[in-house]
Length: 387
Image (tube, rainbow, N blue to C red; front, side):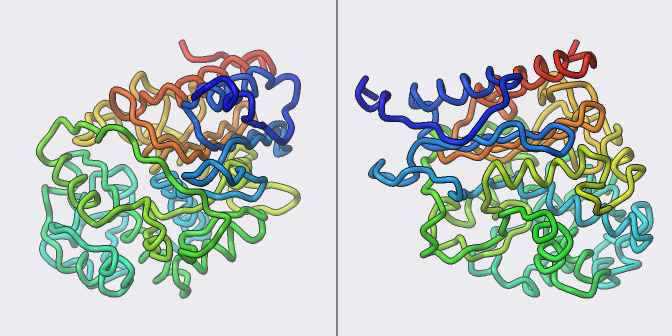
C-alpha cells in the first residue's frame, strides 16, 4: 500500500482517553494494510468506552466501512450458542450433566446415549464432526443435519479426548435449545439476546445485503497437528467457500454469524456485568461464574494446549486472555470477543482481512489487542494482569 492510500484510511467513532492505545493500534493496523476494514469496541461497567470503525469493505476498496457495516465472524458465533445454553441452565430447563438423550431421545443412537451437554461444551463429546462432508445446501437443512447427527458414529469414547468441534457443536447445542425452548434456535437467540440487547447479530443474511463486508482470504491454511483434528477441520473446509456471499443465507450456529464489534461487545458486556444490564436480568451471576471457571485443561486435537470454561476459552499461554479472570472466544481469521466480570470490561473485534499467524491464537492483531486490554485493565482497576 502506497503513502497516499495509507493517508486515505479514515477511522471513525470514539475512544475514551484511557483506552487511547487501543485506537492507536487499530489505526496502525489499517494504515499498514494489515487490516482492510475493521471495527473494535469495548465497554467498561456496561458503558461503551470504545467504538471504532474504519477502512473499506469491498474488493475495489471504494466502499467505506460504515458504522453499521457487518461481516462474517466464523467461530466467534459460538459464544452466542453458549449463552443460549446457559440461559436454559439458569432457568432449570437443562442439567449440564444429564445425558443429552434425556431431552433428545433420537440422539442416543450408535452409543451416544451417555453424552452430556457439559462434554459438548468442552469439546469432549466424541462427535467433533459428522463423519462426512456436508455441503452448504445440506447444512442449510436443519432437520437434515439433525438427522445426520442422530445417525452419526462416535469418533472416540465421550470424555476421553478433547477435539474441537467446528460445526457439530452448534447444531447439537442449537437443537437442545430448540427442544427445550419450543422455538428454533435462531428465534430464541433473537428474542432473548439480540433484540433486548440491541445487538446487530444475525446467523444469516441475504446474499444481496449491502451492509455485509467482503472478506479477504488468509494467505495460508491452519496447520493441524493430529489426524483426528485434521479430519474434523477438513469436513468444514470441504463444505464450500465460506467467504462467498451465496452462502450467507445458511444458518450454521457454530460459524455463520454476521455482525460487528459493537454487537459482540454489547453481548459480552451483559456477561461482564454478571448477567444483568440496564435493569434487565438475563441470567444469574452464578451461572456465569461456572461458565468462566476452569472445566477442562487439555491438549486439543485441533487447537493444542487449552483451558476451557463452559465453551469459552480461558487464559493460557496458547490462547491468551487480557487478564487471568477473563473468558473469551474467537473466529477463524481474527475476530474475537472477551469479557471479564472482575474488571467489568468487555471487548470485541470484527474485520474483513482473514489472517492466520503461526497457529491458532497467534494472530498478531489478536495478541496486540489482548495485551493492550490487559495493560489498560490493570491501570484502571488495579487488578493483576497476566503473569
